[in-house]
Length: 244
Image (cartoon, rainbow, N blue to C red; front, side):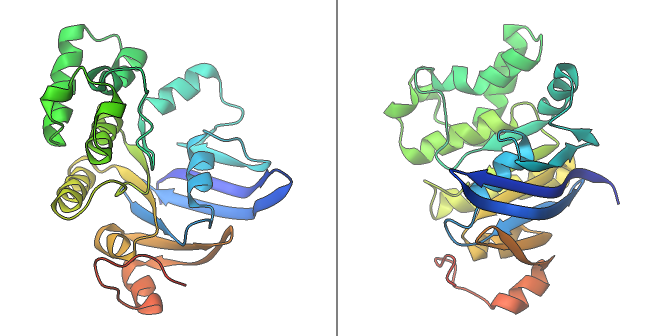
């Protein structure tokens, strides 16, 4: 199997509390994997460990065979240009315009001209239907839903092969949620990208995942295909979220 991400013997402590211990995880190239569990189960922390935003207390995380803890600056740069991250609260830079937020990865990671940057930003804003009247607005001037669309556009602007999504439905509802997740499925299929999503929403896991891991209190209590986890947990109504 061609692994794009692998974690071995992972442990993490915060404020003296053990969050994870001896955790192992593998993500295949081109796989849509969902971490499913209740709030407080450690999903967001795990995504940050897997993406290198947090260092583990012990163990190692490798992306494309590169140990994030020991990699050179050049190797990390080569990995990060292939990654995208969508945070639960959008995490746009507060004093930067929406346009500049979306353009930032291109300006930081490439040597593209501004004309080339604009063409890609225009493409991603159109893909996620970010209202162009907000180009020069700061995030605080937008609704949460529009900020989240802009966050998707920023995460996709480098066309990542590895995408981390932390509760990406935050601020979206109804038709907007359906639209964004159709874009995700299409991107996954067309680009062969690996997607790793954390959510409390079973209906999203069932609709999107190739494989699901159940996380409870820092432990992976079950892992399997969507059908296997569906049979274990049972169906839920579309508006429902996790319940123990």
